[in-house]
Length: 115
Ligand code: HEC
Picture 1 (tube, protein in one colour):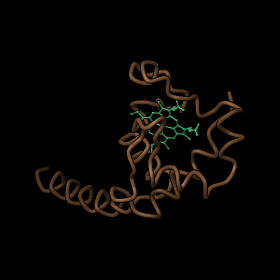
Picture 2 (picture 1 turned 180 degrees about the horizontal axis):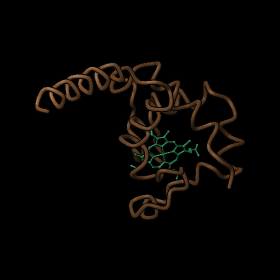
Picture 3 (picture 1 turned 180 degrees about the vertical axis):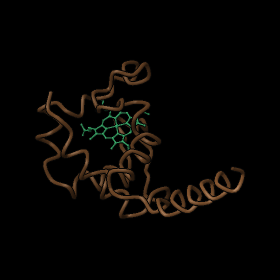
């Protein structure tokens, strides 16, 4: 019995190791969760406590969608951050995330569900 458990846990270790490389969906989940969601919420609607306080925009709204139809604009926003009236609102992420991660984030943002 003991050896069966040992063999199983060994197999488990191998399979989790294989999943170490992230696919796009996961990149989005990880980076979005870490860098965007505490203001904009999981669904991008900005209904978290901080989001409401800071008046984070609803990223699924027509206004934001129209402004950021193209991926390059979003990539720039995520890379350089966002400052309004001299106040830093979103910090730049180009040193935190890889180009591929930023791109994946922009792509997924564009595919957020409409409200
Ligand atoms: C510290 C809170 C905070 C974080 C973290 C944050 N945002 Fe924002 N975001 C805001 C606020 C507040 C606004 C609304 C700014 C304004 O008044 O125009 C905003 C606006 C935006 C807009 C619309 C900008 C425009 O031109 O109208 C986009 C797109 C956006 N955020 C994307 C993101 C993405 C992608 C991330 C993660 C990489 C992120 N935000 C992280 C607070 C945040």
